[in-house]
Length: 100
Image (cartoon, rainbow, N blue to C red; front, side, top):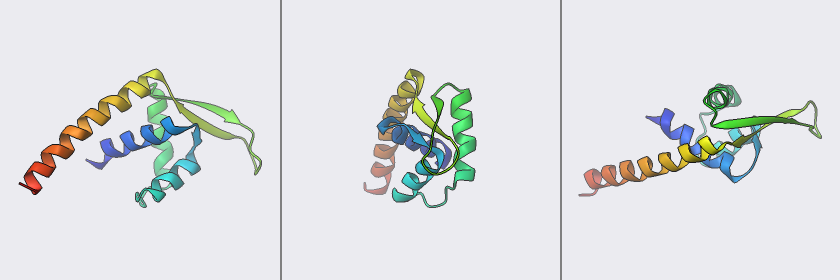
């Protein structure tokens, strides 16, 4: 279940601004997803890039080698919107069960 949720959360974070992998892992940790490291994030980003949900651009870094920054494609934006609808429905259904 977490797999689909983390994908949606990653898309939502990338929608805010272009972001590189380590920064994305830090953001997820700030939001309470403390079990996701860079090693977990990069395979997800590679898959999302193959699915054409995100694109990447290499940019200079002030601290070392170039960094790969990710941004959403239109397909990624559409997927995020669909995720948000599915999440809202799932959240409402679970809340009805838990708080009837």
